[in-house]
Length: 258
Image 1 (cartoon, helix red, strand yellow):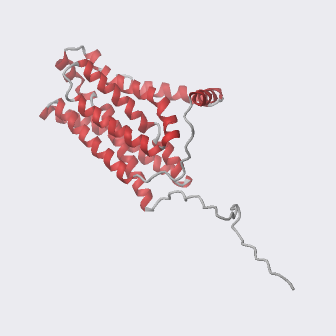
Image 2 (tube, one colour):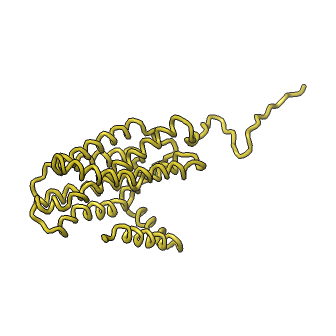
């Protein structure tokens, strides 16, 4: 008496394991999820750089308002970018531990709230503290946005989605400067910054509501020893340090006053 054995066929490159679930597919262009991701990251980039550079056109106004020199008034912008750079060292590893979306949502909300609080400051030191907190908060978006895209978007469409994200950064920096300058002429600098803060807060809420949860994120432990090891590995690479230096020089040339 013979027995017939059936063997399931699986596509090449896939392993059929009983009880194992297939990994979630990457998000592809043309799907509703892709539209939600690109809109969310575009708005996040828009809000990030609007908050970061909104004080640039009102530096002379701040100089007169608080009785500081024009050179000292520029610290309100420099301290934000400096704290953003410092925060980048930590928000990336933090997102590796607790997730991409929670870090980005929290960062946007904190930055918008700190910007709103800055409109209530009556001292120059208060302005600088708020601007420092804004920069530190925004590092949570700058460090994590591209990581989220590379994890969730199909490799064929990562470059396109990152291009939209970067365009949001550029448009945000331009519109933040432009709108703050116009609103300051008509309503004063406090109302102008409050308007930018309100826009950023609305963008943060929309970002929280429409950005899909991570499907390919795998948490890792957040240990100082692991962070130090990773930092050392980056600097031991033969190519990465050159890219770090190139970015440093290019941004320095880009931001150099003329």
